[in-house]
Image (spheres, rainbow, N blue to C red):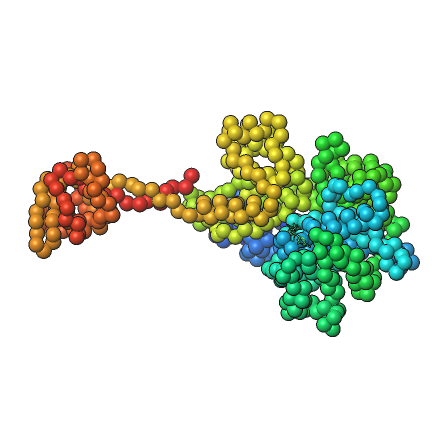
Length: 610
Ligand code: GDP
């Protein structure tokens, strides 16, 4: 590597293809370290390229590529997945499930319910749960834990089916993108009285993109005016052709309200699974899977509902889930009853983690506690960097130079479960409100809004968003005293809508009136050609031609919406006349002027944003 000077700055150069691997969210300092350069010199080079950044700020891929091509390096941004794979490999843990054919055994299908809002996803999940509870005459599944398993008798055999039970989240990109990996079959709910709607299509696209077979539940058939054939016809256009129309998609008419058709739906799920999927897993290996939901329980600490995808999870296992780790202290089923182990496709609540993992985080059983901890710690560090990169949207040089133009809305997100916090964060960061507004999520977490959250909001002028959570202890009092804006939501859409509106509000210029000058009428000249002309003395400021004006008589505004049509000094037209000078003012067609009236001029100025 040579070190020629670029505009006086010494920077090592590559030959155009010299590779540099950087993790996502890296900074110029990281880059400098890789190529043996001085970080400050990279700041300078980047500046010349029209981008301004500090040495330690996380930069995006485009910026690194720009800098790389200038300096002759082929910048490769290592994805978090690659990074994690490398991390696991360093502990001799393979990334893929490398099971021998003979170890594989059938496993139950995992089902996600999707569909348009209000088409009955929640109801359907409840109905399926209830049907099954009645059938087994067991204790009721009362608590929503993110996933449950039911048993359906199919051709004389009792077969379990696992349901991901996260209504309200699944329409969000984050959950869908991750959910698809855990889902074998999608039940697409379409209300018979409403038909195909935008989110129906969204859900459909997602399932098809992930190559997940779909069973259509045509819901609300109990309703008057319900037309179950309508949904069938509409979905044909999207490649979902009902079996009775010669296609290969099973459509089942159901009523989540009355429970009608639920058994048929479960039957259809099993038939579809058997026909198009070979669902197998190795039950004997160390367990691996995904966290569906996680929360902080007051008494029990972090509780994660995990879905085992391979192997068998047992009490006592050393486990790492995202950047949380621990030893499985107890495993509970969806009823809250303890179980000793959970095999493939089995959802289970795990107690014993040291922190709350994120929804969609994968988990694995590590050979030792120490390794679980090390993996978790390395992941936490990587996640911190990634979050830094995510929350910091790039600000261009122009924005920097006109710093006052950049509006920042700082947010702190708190939610009841990590799934909602993540879904909210992802959706918020995707809001597109132009370059002038910068949205920063400076902190997020699961649990009540704490005094710490409020203090951070005070320090950084942030708004706190509470999703299904409330302030704890003195936090409310503190927020009121400090004037922190805390907003509570229980519907993600609503939170997003309001934040979007707030962002747009920031963008909307606000105008305020600025007085320019006042002139007192000393004399009124009548002109047949120009109408009445006011002979004035400018009392304050200046009078400008064409500016907006109003007429004040005895302290009362008698006419608004006027304009300085003509302005003269002696015989000459003037553009402005200053305080202390005399002038002639014509107000156009407005002629009702009297001696001692005051003409006030003003303009509307954009209010400086604070
Ligand atoms: P989601 O937004 O898709 O989860 O929809 P919900 O499950 O919350 O249901 C939306 C509304 O439709 C609720 O008022 C339900 O009571 C109602 N609903 C759901 N399923 C049925 C059904 O089969 N028949 C009727 N009549 N109403 C239903």
